[in-house]
Amino acid sequence: MASVTHAQRTFCKLAQIPTDSNLSLSCVDSSGQLMDCNYLSVTYGASGTGASYCFVSPRVGAATNVTSLNITSLTTNGASGALGTVVFSRSTQSERTDYLCLGSEKFNIIDFKVSGGGGYASITYGVVRPVNNIRLSDNILYDNGS
Image (cartoon, rainbow, N blue to C red; front, side, top):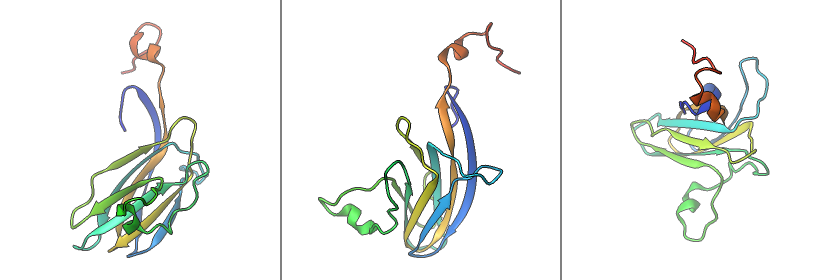
């Protein structure tokens, strides 16, 4: 989420998720400490040529672990939704999907549920926040750097 109006501190992980399984990843910084995040970006690639869906859910606020969610229920009329996003892959990697928390919400665990063939996920997580607008427009008070 590169933007001149936002500051970011992000970390990344690569994860292999086996066929029809669940995985929970902790969001840790470079020293291994659990950190509260408000930003998540995921790309998913199936390891085979078959179709594979990956449900990605950050544990935000009071949201509970939703790895028991049946992905096929998301297409049923009247079925309740679940916090997160679904990424799809078939022989090529998915498009990148971004998630940004509202207000003061935070998460430090990300749950994955794969339906179909397993695959690989590239995950970027961290903290993104707006910068001071005065800093963007005032060239005298704030140095633009080199």
